[in-house]
Every structure is written in structure tokens, then in C-alpha cells.
Image (cartoon, rainbow, N blue to C red; front, side, top):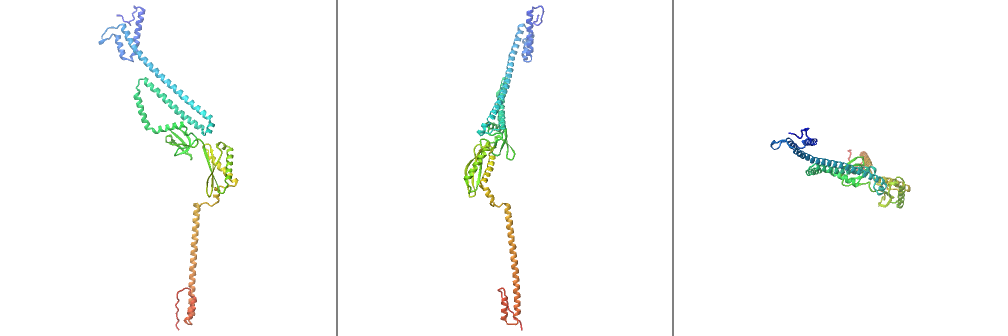
Length: 444
């Protein structure tokens, strides 16, 4: 029997071409669906070989071959369209996400650069307003803010694109989102300190609480800000040490470099000083300081004499104040003291420090030791004098006793030839004490 694919030459050319096309189409369909659908391949092969119910049947007709080929081609066409559509959609999402991320990051960078240029152009206005912003402070602050904004934008864009791709692939997002939520909660509990530090650093930068070069007091430590990060702030203390302070641990901040500072000087003069002359000297010093460089830039207002702060028996205190640039109060105070001291000396007004230097001050430890040594020496000299006096008294007493004994002996010898009365009278002048001296009669 003639087969559609036998290609016998006795058939007409148009009909042979149609049969050949059908054979080629069927073969192509078999090759395309071979890897995709084994069941469709088996069905098409059974129709081609004439196997029907029970594995029996004769050769199929041209209409059956066309029907099987059309079914297989329709299945391929339907799935191929879905595959191509899903691939194109995923590719489009990825391209849009990359372009959008690039545009957003570039826009943020341009915005930060524009803010920096405006800040540089408004340095004088900032100085008049009382907020000094150094170049390093602006640079670090803008970099930190730009980094935060770029990270947030990238996370949002890439995360949204990834969820859209997973949805197009037919993946159920509910379990995935639930797992992500549980992981986020666990991460929040485990790393809550880090999250707190990051959030505190972000708000600190956005609010511009302090910057590089500012003198700040954060409670336990104080110093000059060296570097600001999202998690840690570096401070240099007064002794040169570097403190690393976590942003989440900062509960209060005292910024000594924002606004303006006050330079306060106490002028101490003697109680008998002329206060009008003191005021005149201080006012003249303030005027000269405001006209000289570089103090004219550091002083924002003229030096002001607030008045008499206190009066005691030893001194009078006159308070002097000046509004200065932030962070320059100590420098201005030193210069004011220097000039006020020279002005008072020129006018002959003595300060209480000079008066106190002329008077003997309280004894220090060395003076007390010297006084104790002198007292001990005096006590020793007194003891030696007393001992010498006692020794002299003892020698004098012994000499007196010897003289008395000698006189008694002579009196006894003189009374021997005479009577007793004469002996008594001769012995009486030689007695030196109140004790009775017995008289003895010599035998005849």
C-alpha cells in the first residue's frame, strides 16, 4: 500500500509536496516534544505507527497524522508562549530594577553634592547665625546620610524586584514572607543593640546634633568629635585619649560648639579701689581688643562690664563678660585677663592677688616642720638651762654646808677655854639652818 512518506514518483508534484510537508512537520513535532512531554510523544508515535486500543490497528490515514501533529504543536505553542512571556517579564523586571537603582543612587549623590555646595556658599551666613560647619564635618555628614539613603533605596528596589520575579515563577510568597518575618524578629532580639545604635546614628545625623570638630559632652566623657559613624562616634579627650562611644548609649549631648560661647572674667581688686576707674580701664581694654586682629572675629559683641559681683572685707569682684565664637571662650578669657592686668597696673590699681602676695600666707607643711623644729630646739635649750641652774644650786648648797661645818668646828675650839655661854655665843653666828647644834663640855 502506498505510504504518505514513501515519496513514490508516480504521484503528482503538488500532492507530493503536501505529503512531504506533513511528514516533516510530524517529525519536527516529535523532536520538539520528545524532551518536554513523553506522554505526548507516545501518543503521537502510536498514531504514526497505527497502534490503537490494545496495541492493534492498521496504518493511519493522513488526517490522523495531521490531527496528532496539530495537537502536539498546539501544546508546544501554548507552553512556549508562557515560557517566553515569563522570561521576558523577568528580564524586564531585572532591567527596570537595575536602571531605577542607578537613577535613584545618582540622584541622591547629586542632591548631596548640591547641599554641600550650598553649605560652602553660605559659610558667612552660618557664622552670623551661630552655627559653624567645617568642611570635614559637612563631608562626613553628607557621606553618612548619602550612604544611608542609597542603602535604603537599593534594599527597597532589589527586594521588590525579587518578590515580583518569585511571583512570576509561580512560587507562593506567603510562606516565604512568614519565614522572613520570623527571621527578622529573631534578628531584632539578638542584635537589638546594633539596631539601636544604627537608628540612633541615623537620627543623630539627620538632626545634626553634632559634627566633626565640635566640643561635646555626652555624659560620662567629653571631648572633640573626630569621626561620626552610624554605630560609633569617636571623641578625643582632654589628655589626648580617644573614646569610642556607641550611638545607642548616648542619652544626652551637650554641644559646646554650636550657637555662641560666653567668656567670663572676674576682676578682683582691693576694697579701697576706685570702681569707676576700674570700669573705665576694663571698657577701654574691651574696645582695644575688639579692634585688634584676630580678636575682632572671635568677639561677636563688645566686652561688657556686668557690675560688682561681690564685696568682702578683703576684696571686691567685678564681673566682665563677652560673647564669643563657639569653642573660643577660653582663649578670649586668657587674653582679657592679660590685658586687664596690664591696664590695672598702669593705673596703679592693685589686685587682691598682689595684696595677698605681700602678706604672710598660711604655713605650709615645710613651714610647719620648721616651726616644730624651732620649738623643739627652744624646749631643749630651756631644759639645758634648767639643768645648769639646778646643778649650780646644788654646788652652792654643798659649799654652804661645808662653810657651816667649818664654822662650827672653829666655834667649838674657841669655846673650850671659857664657859658655856661663850661657846654658845661663838657658835650662834656660824649656824646656817634651824637645826639645833648640841654643845659639849670638855673635861678638865
